[in-house]
Image (cartoon, rainbow, N blue to C red; front, top):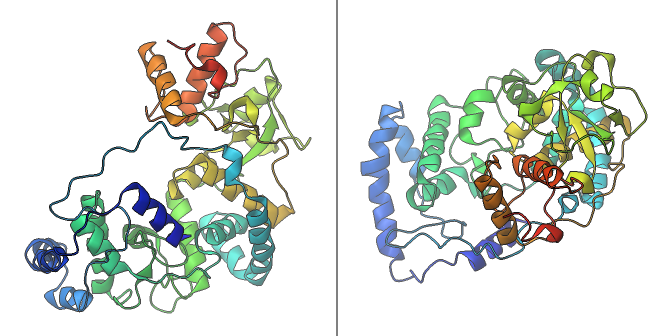
Length: 410
């Protein structure tokens, strides 16, 4: 998958022909380590010995995406006339989910005792932890071939997000300085994410735990440490013990779909009083009725509908995507309860040109709506703004952009 991403990025943002300049840029990189990064690392408590050991034999990795070598200009903004997003349903590959579920159930059973201890300590259900473990690293089986120091240093020296990667590089050096891991063992992804939970180094420093009590938090080789670190992350980000992530529901036609978002939370009992029911036919847990719930309609009226809990937004802290959080929730339900796909089908949406959605967003902003990021992608603020505009203009609210609306919102 990483190779495909590199190829795609290379097509979109090809590096200029720098073969003749690479030796000079490599020399600049070595000087940068000593004269620029070095003082910064020293102020962060990194010793000269650690710095030299970490960078011994390290050169730039020119195969990484999103590089901006010295002397080159940032890539032009990508043409937004392309159809750059597809139906949300494309995210939920049934074949992949079934494979993760089968493996996840086996590992859930194998590590049941550890997962019970983790839930007791952090309040996060084992199935949620296992689902994230599977999604992030294939339950620790994904290959992590990259030197994290090399990746982070390359990106801190020449990428479009230098400052972020510089901070992560200092965090990685702090890990080495503390004796958490040595540079050779610190393997990660092409983006610098580490170990089985795919933590960035700053997250390791905040959340990694030594659950097997062997003296250090090893998220590469220790399953108890990796799983407990995931749970600790979620706990620190606000996971509410005893609550689910959310529920697939049926929203009656007379209930506006323009009510979604974490800022429009209501007691679950209020949603129930409005006629919203669980699609499974089961009642909402009694403990949830007085607690906050939020509407979520990722495809508007064209796909599954949900009432989610604050825990859903904690899952988004791990990866800031509604679809990621839904994937984790659905996978966790399959692992724990034998659940299957969402009951409602995903409609044929998501084929709009990004530039068309962008035009709709700009028109809505001009009318006083808060659409969130004006980027041609239909986030929840765009969806609910669109639904509100539809209702006020005599249209049946769908809360999702479609070709029939082109040119109507002006």
